[in-house]
Length: 331
Ligand code: FES
Image (cartoon, rainbow, N blue to C red; front, side, top):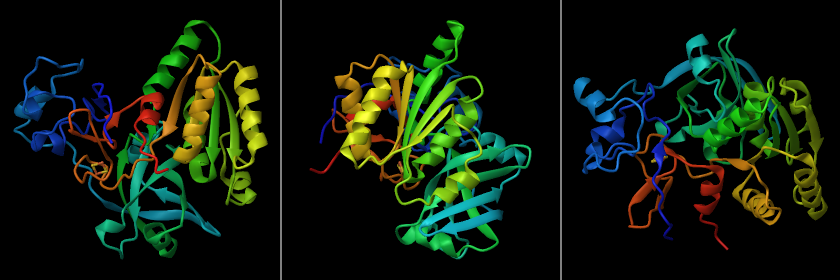
């Protein structure tokens, strides 16, 4: 399937992990000179990535390495695993931004058991991060057998598309001297990135959370959702009349922004709803592409660009709306 092809920026461009392996292999997303072209179409406004790469001796910067970390909390609720990991203060600080995820695996398993999991909350004081894992297949089920430690790699930043637009919307609200209004809609463990959003933005802005707990026991959220939204309601997204509830909330809520952390099916459904209602704000959505390496190397998350080129969705920085356009849904 081919897509129209706007220019994307890389989520890691100019950050502590840039230049990365893509620069080394001549496939940099942000830099023309590190992808076999020239500087003429450069849209990067930060420090020149090519210069950084050359000055740094053509070495990649701060390669994300695996490390074994102690499990300080662990509970299993049917197929949902709750984990608290002592990653240290430095790592926990890096896990603070919304949309952060890490790779996890049992130390007894091979590297291909690595699975990307959203950070639900980062306790910087304690140096602990908290996660929810839905254990439904080989990789995730294998995590239920971990005991004292787990192997972690990260943090990675592209777990949510549309974070830039979220910051812009909230800045606009602040400029107008008011609190921003965000509607977050989640299903099952999608409540984890919603909780992260509340941790990061909940102090200064009002976040209404509509959560479909799906297969999760209520006890999980009562015990482990520390960050409280401005308003919370539970709903079953499979029930048509609850889609009407969302419609009413969007119409009556005067929201600046909508964040959807669900499967692609509901992201599309809610995306269509916002279009139909002419929603004036912007959107963020969970990155549901098939992320495997997270480094832009393996190609698992690829979609084809207009000219047949490969776009890596673990690295490309999309808006929520752009991400919806790029989904390939089997019908
Ligand atoms: S997950 Fe490997 S290239 Fe994106």
